[in-house]
Amino acid sequence: NYRQNKQATDLVYLPQACTNLADAAWSTNNLSQVSRADSNAWWSVTVRHDTPITNAPARFMRLRVDAP
Image: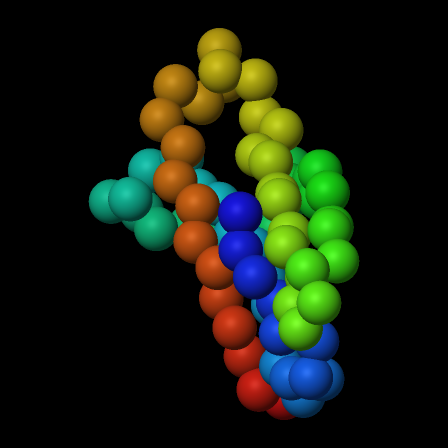
């Protein structure tokens, strides 16, 4: 879950995931936005990692925020 400021239109929010911190191969693959709720000044966003537990017993997620 993360908050996305509605007024910060110059920022790009990029949820990322990986299954191994040693390799740190962060990716946006297999991620789904579950919900986006309006909370006045921001969006409340929920993202899920869709890789089955049998294929990735460990999962790590982060939110990358870039200014283009």
